Image (cartoon, rainbow, N blue to C red; front, top):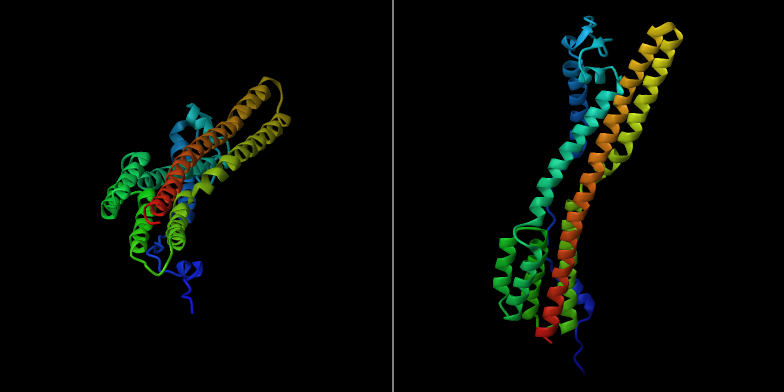
Length: 287
């Protein structure tokens, strides 16, 4: 009876060295809440400090009716209760920008990704898998992590006599795909906050402007003469602070979102190239 070789299913069931890393993402729900509270504190107690107004409302409360702003910053206080929400949105954007810079910077690793892949290719061409793994330890990024997982399976497949070359290549490819599936979510995490705020901040700013305009025209109807025109111009100026703050927050969100997605695309390309390098190298060296 002829001996049958294991099918590709056998390779698919081979053990994997890739283990998921459990990381808490509490920042995703704590940061927006804390930032909105901080936005209210800035608006109420710093921008709305009684010393910034000629006619302060000393009764206090959630929204004191301060009048006679002395500075442009104090005028922003009179933009209404939408202003602290917009300040909180801006603080949220800055928080996630810092968090993404740290995470993506760590995922990028050290050195140039293309140069790292060339070094691994050189070591593999010289049948020195251990030296290639050492390069991954030096890289210390997502590309290095994926490459290291693939190299471990690569080394294991060299001595796997029960499988043919195609099955070994499939096993290496599967290992790389599993490692990639664990790395990519970490890179893209929390970017949804930047994309959401980029859209919502402008709308919130326009909402604050509309509310301010309604209030201004209502005040215009209760008075007349030159005083009415003055109050209307002041009300429009104060309402437009909402628009300016909303557009500014949206602009920062869009710019940083595009910067991060570009960096992630570069890392993803490096991961894809590393997987291709491993499979092609094994297929050519161990036919």
